[in-house]
Image 1 (tube, one colour):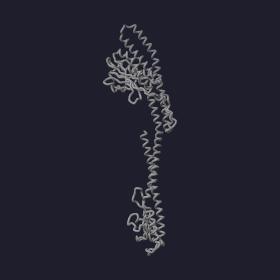
Image 2: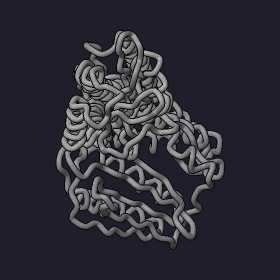
Image 3: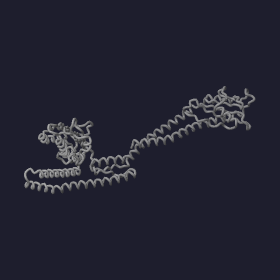
Image 4: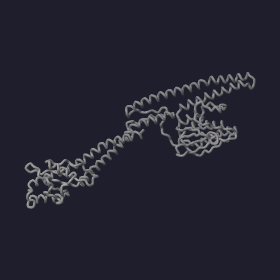
Length: 479
């Protein structure tokens, strides 16, 4: 979500900055040019005042004309601006340089014609920094006795003007860039503030999904909608936890209450068997089903206890524990004619030793059940790439499972239709998964080539975060 929200905010803020920056840049350019235009108009007005007293009839002896020529020459030498005063018929009264004449076309001619009408020329077109050859032409009328007798024309280079505009634009660009950096930082903070509650909700949801039912979200900050969502989420989690607790209590109570009547029933079956002929098939079948029912009740009680009791994690030598369980199960394997081997190096991990022992017992027992005589079951302890966990792999050479069966293996009461004749309640692997999940571990199933099943038991390599029973108290108002 952040990858979609952040670019949207950045584009929006960039659009706002550009919408402010372009008019500001244009206004700066217009202001700089207007300052130059006003300055040139003042100069033209001064030359026009001098030209009012220049006589057109005696161009060679008029002292005022000589003075005017000197003023224009000095002006041109100092500022590099061409300036001239021209009569209505385009003849030059005075000019610097001397050979400069009124342009026949373009902006200079337009300004000259406007000045002949008795008003100063309109503002010239805007000059931009990239117009290297642009010039500013200003014209002002010379009025004598109410009539326009001549026109003052100035033609200015724009290098300094374009440099000032460019410097101003660079400052604007620097300001826009700094504002954009601040805006991007603000966007990161804003998206972090908005999405932080969502991330916390996602994390708590994952905790609840993996069995940490007492995880909650502290709705102490953030947008009001998300605070209400947090309260609703906590109410839902409370209801789910209550329902699961009632379910566990029911299963545990029912299993416990049924054991005594079942034990009495089995005892009566044994007494009844004494009255019947030896080897009676019916009584043997009833005895077998009774024992199977007792096993199911025991497994249900173990499952309820496993879901209710928190794991007591400690640093455990997983290799030594696995080797111990292999040694304990080797007599069973030898009795069945299965070779049970172990490669259990010294590897430590964080686990509940009792829960891990029970899990390994269930997995090894399951492997020995389905492995025919003469085949092999191997138990290997290793650290997968990444080093975040310790893996105990139990691989058998039994019939294995199909892809559809691999999806369902570990479900409660599920057993493959091809293995219904083998003793079991279908709860052993479910109990194993619950025990491992409570400690941050896991259980995975995969085919074992060329045939058989690979069961991987994983536990954390490093100390997991103390999150069981923890209420997430991060304040949503902090980004």
